[in-house]
Image 1 (spheres, helix red, strand yellow):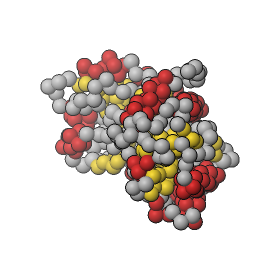
Image 2 (cartoon, one colour; image 1 turned 60 degrees about the vertical axis):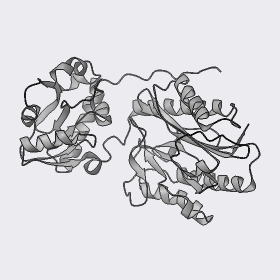
Image 3 (cartoon, one colour; image 1 turned 90 degrees about the horizontal axis):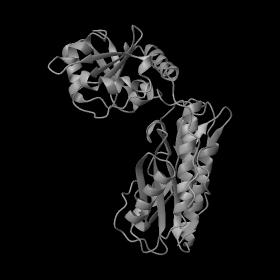
Image 4 (cartoon, rainbow, N blue to C red; image 1 turned 45 degrees about the horizontal axis):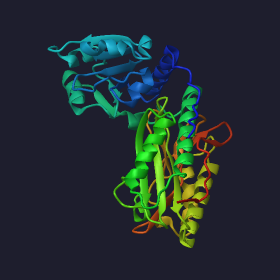
Length: 378
């Protein structure tokens, strides 16, 4: 196997991180928030490129507000790592020592009667500590108050997502050359993990291998079932490359498929195409879901499509926006998300096809480009 590599994208700069923080402060003000509190997790990585080496009980938080410059509060023993973060030059650093009250220090950075958006990943003990220190403050989940915070990607982010998608495509192109019959699902999943890493992923998040009846479970964990001739096998895999996510799904068949497998696969292929065709600026997220779902419902399998049509992707493999009924957020150029309809026949087999799509100025562009036809494997 020849491993091809994508060029290294440009490093993010302090200006990139500063621009992101300005966007968040502006969005917070538009939503009547006094500011935003960001704790370790994907939001902090996106905003300043800082991922603490060990996420512990010690309080770490970035405070963004119109009243002050961006400020990162860290335990003093972790200050050197924080100073080495990609975006450290775009924030002020404040530290605290063991034996002191970190919430008292944090309180100096917050308006005492304000409402703040706070990371979904914040520990309850930290939120309760802030409430004790500043009893008149109020807090709202960032996913609820600023759900689109990371949704629109810049050119550098799109380059990274495209590289991750290409690596996932190369992984699929290689895995279908491998033997499936008489092997356990876990063995094929291990191959997927190895291939994702060989094609440049620094992190593998999931390798779903659902064979036969296990394919009817959308998030099946690869198990000890031995793959048999005639099985439809759902392959759903992804992770991070250059810090950004991949996620693709194809369904293959071991040997000659039945007419029913062929029929269901073709319905899902048409549904996935309809979802992608619906992507363009101004269309709401739910319209993408409706377009894909209509094809499956009209074919008589509506009750067997049991999940949303898609999810956003970026520094995590699942994030807003979500392609689901009730989500009226309009699509904006630069948004990236999956389009992944499926049909699941309990106890028999399942079929799912998934690509990552980015919204362009006049439509949508796939970041996965492997063949959508039913692939026969050995």
